[in-house]
Image 1 (cartoon, rainbow, N blue to C red):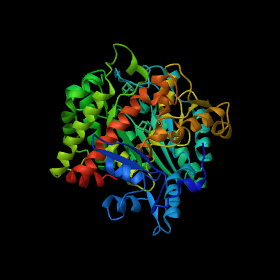
Image 2: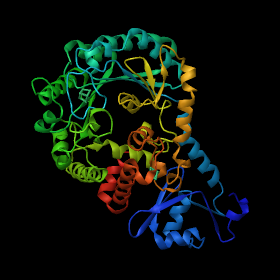
Image 3: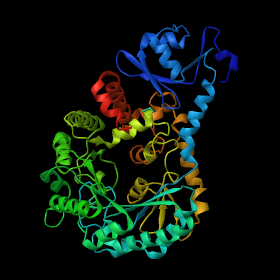
Image 4: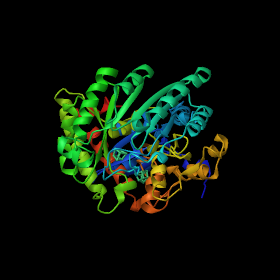
Amino acid sequence: MFHDRARYQSSRGYQLAPLRFSRLDDARYIATNDVGEYVVMPREELVEFISHSLPANRPTYKALKSRHFLFDEHSRVALELLALKYRTRAEQLANFTGLHIFVVTLRCDHSCAYCQVSRQAEGRLEFDMSQEHADRALDFMFRGPSPTLKVEFQGGEPLLHFERIRYIVERAKALNQVHGRDLQFVIASNLSRLTTEVLDFCREHGVLLSTSLDGPEDLHNAQRPVRGGDSHQRTLDAIRRARQALGPDAISALMTTTQASLGRVEDIIDEYVRQGFHSIFLRNLSPYGFAVRPRASRPYDVEAWVEFYKRGLAHILRINEQGYPLQEEFTAILMQKIFSPRGSNYVDLQSPAGLGIGALVYNYDGAVYASDEGRMLAEMGDFSFRLGHLSRDSYESIMTSETLLAHLSDTMPEGVPMCSDCAFLPCCGADPVFHQATLKDAVGHKAFSAFCKKQMSVLRHLIGLLEDDARARDILMGWR
Ligand code: SF4
Ligand code: SF4
């Protein structure tokens, strides 16, 4: 029900700007607004503020005023400033689809029990991307308006089809002579096929590498089986050679948390430090592919991962205090969401979700998906996020398809029950593929959502650190 504007205007000193509030802990509440500002205050002060009786000489009043939660007679340009900040945060929507994922093959030489992409055996060449589909995908990529185009090669193990990677990089660069975009290339690889030829190519074309390192040798080898049983040693050798050939920052690593990792977060982080990394992503297992097969990979609940994350973050903060810079990437994304005027480009935490407009995925078989997780879900028989096919559909028909538009309108948390009233909304997102996989509904009832539980727990913990722990705050503010 809508009321007349006058109803919201107070004769008692100040007006309220749009805001949401939620309980932070037993004593305090957090209020946030749509431009990502936040203020933490005791419940009594929140009640005073909302009922227009907060005295102007209180520090909380000044914080609320400077962060656009209230306007008084001295706030001349406050509303315009608020609108400007909101537009800045939404600006990236105009330059849509900066990430283009080419699944050049689904074949892989590893047999990880948690494999979320449902990899195929090494000899099955029918799971390779054809040149015709690569050409069509490149055409799609340059049709979008984004001035920056990141091409990510995924698998399976993409280096098993290196010839297709070579073709796509060279062709993209040739086409870019006309288009003039800022092109970046990343190969996400287990590195077992990192030959000198591949390294020379990466150096020549500025291609970066991203790999998986699950922790110390015993844990990594148990989780990532390969013929010979020496995945860890092979990965470390390849990291060393890649750094020598391409420079110290040309390779990054990711870990996946399994049941076996849960009690070993310090060991995992120490391994990253030993190997000279300055960043680590404490990534939970996602419910796709082999990861949800009974017996293949033992599941754990979200509370167990949150404890793993909290212990890991505490360990990382200690390492930073001892003088070694190490950043946790999920926390860094949330810090950008909270403090950067532009938010973050992380596709899972956007409104609307980054489906299609954050990333497009060109699968090995020519199908086009709205996200990387969407193609993983398709391997399990659920095609909810398939937008079309490179052989049959045009770029325009895919980007205006009913499927994509319906997903985008469903994935704006501002209109979703529970999210619309939640103070954590400006730092959150929709993750529709996760909800489709776990609740069989892309929006999902948030009271039953493990994504929601994870977001709330992590954000409460992070805001608590920022408020209560000056040394942690100093380190975290450097990750924005
Ligand atoms: S997780 Fe990666 S390396 Fe492991 S089997 Fe799957 S595709 Fe291969
Ligand atoms: S998913 Fe949960 S934490 Fe995120 S905005 Fe919605 S209700 Fe809040």
